[in-house]
Image (cartoon, rainbow, N blue to C red):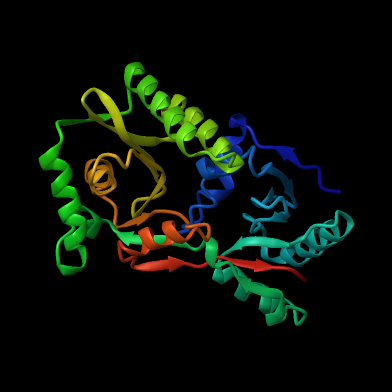
Length: 300
């Protein structure tokens, strides 16, 4: 019998005991990602046979399990069978989502029942990975347009970059987040939850080990970004918001944030495009070095 518990801040040390040994390139298994979407995805967890089992719902309201973490090899078959039974009893749409390719291969080696028809690439949730150095330098023909946008912002605006550390900047960023939400929400519940998450993150920067900057133009926040280093080689950008009335603002904050806070890592994870056409186009325009695949598994 699995008894799931809603994720809270107090669970951080428990989850990280299981997640930290893994070197995921995906953003999904960082505590920050799990926590900031805890309400939107009703994120819950349990420990079964000393393995971490996370249950979530996607943005369409369908429940699923994430990849079990910390399991002993001899227990994996039993864990999978238990989860499959839970799925059946609770009429879940999916068994697993957010699976890495290595885990898919492990499942195939365990069971002849795993068929290609059960496995689906989740393209809308592929993570975009970039070389940090290229995002900082914006050199070469491919990045010529981005560099022009960056230079345009630098040339045309009287700006100041501040780290999100003191109470004054925190208040300004929360105000800017509220303004961005009011202007863009269109009754989008995901943006509602994201706005709540931004405020939660900013008020707990140290707890989440977050870095953040705010770009001021004429004493108003024109853009802000939040991210974290997941390990020595990888950082993830969780939030990036800008006022498009300032020409070149996104090129400026993208380059500046990484240069200021994450110049010592090799890879930047800028998360998914969620199938949004404009967002996909924007992320591809920075020429990712890799799309980190994620998979859905419907049967076992």
